[in-house]
Length: 394
Length: 159
Image (cartoon, rainbow over all chains, first blue to last red; front, side, top):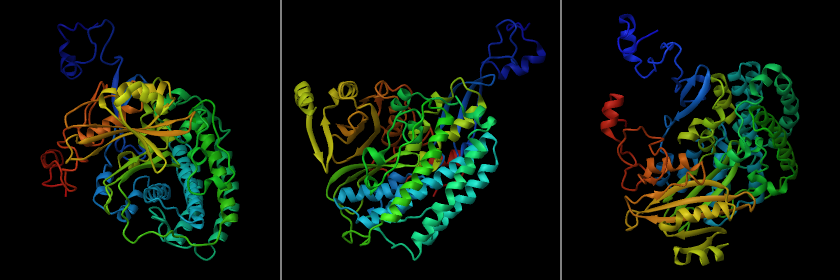
């Protein structure tokens, strides 16, 4: 037994550094102490970027976490105040860089609302097709990396292989694969290229068996079930209180999707389901996102079949000067509710742009989801939250 | 809803209006804490979408602080806005919506607005020792905390 008053000279050196441990209690040495604080990240590959999580552990059990964020902070909101409305448009792509099209859609629609104009129907359909393709790409990237974190390596190769087809369509449409800057305030810059519909339909026929393939690898896989069932559970009430949105909220049993609740673009024209979960665990979030991929395909097919002819750009003044006022507009991005709050002072530059990032708000739920879980579950939960640090830090 | 609230708070609600189809209220800071509680409990605005601020340096009451709320049962949004002067603190909404925690920390980080009763009000995106509040209008776009940059990154300038 160790007497704290007169420490053993051999351990005295060590205890100097470990004074916070309760060495005074009988039968306790600094080796079997109760709490341990360790640091995960910011360069840990499973944190999907630069996220630092401080974990307080008892053995392997997590007692609490604290996220340290901001490593990727670029001051997007400040930049917006110093650019014109048009100049700021490409910047939004750099927030959630795996779903850049959604970012652009939200921003363009918010400014259009402020200008009180509407994009023409054809532009809206093009927007829906590209945004839904991007949702699929985002979910594929999520699935690949999430499965990789948990230990299944194959889905990563499958999903990246198939995601490539979407990026090819983007590249052919606007020349960029990731930070697309596909939309403009008032509509779209580019008309669809020759054979766009054919490419999209080809993709729609190509991808459903691939999604089945991902499911074959995981849905009934015993290891996958053990690692995801009842892991990172968040109740419906907690999810609402924490402002969690997107697939994470739906997996907790809230049937809420902005595409249905407050339809924007052309979403009211399409028929699709909102998949929901019941337990709010990592497995439910997985099944919700898998089903969302199929629903996205459904929307794209309807959009390609019904796409109207006509102009792709509304009558927008050369210099965009919205009248004085404030607007909040949000869309259902792949991660959740992505909102833009824009204040105009009547000049060519926004007075203030606030981005309501889904990843930032969802990440706040990490703590409640991993308490009492194991360290390995923290990795699974970070994956299932589907955060993009570019959007968390802006 | 606005009618009952106006009856309850009288001149506490300075303006209740809608712009481009979006409803907003401008209220006195003294009633905002109670009002937010009422909006959540009685009017079922159960989801706090966002908390943010806007800086108007030429005004006496320099800051607008906004709560963007959404109600799942009503499928409606509303914005609640107060105006405060520099140094004045705002009652924290953390007891009402847990999500307010990080959102208020970000407002504090970017504007230096203090939230009274917040459990852990500290910077969130910028480093702890940083001086200045970047989203204030008097903070330049290329301005940095040079001392911090020198001490922590070991370089003359972050530019």
